[in-house]
Image (tube, rainbow, N blue to C red; front, top):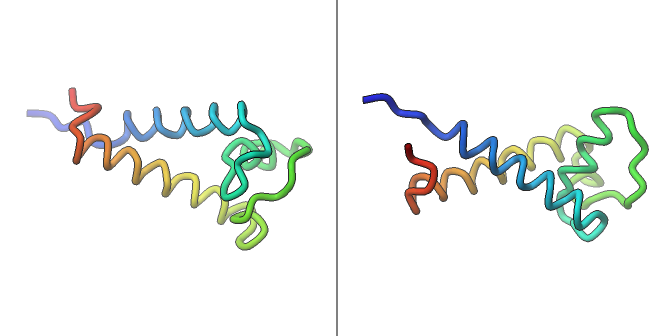
Length: 85
C-alpha cells in the first residue's frame, strides 16, 4: 500500500495561505506569505513589515510560512483524516 504523505495537502495549504494573504493584504500582521513572495521576486512591498519579518528577516518569514502550513497540513491529515487518498 502506497502512502502519499503530507506533500499534496501541504502544498494546498501553502497556496491557500498565499491566496488569503493576497486578499487581506496588510491585515496579516504576524506573518504575510504574499509579501514574502514579493520580496523573493524583488518586487516592492507596499504594506508594512510583518512581525516575523521585522524580527527575523526574509528567511525567518519564509520559514515560518512553511512551518505554519506544514503544521496545518499535519493536523488536517493525521488528526482529522483530510487529504488521505
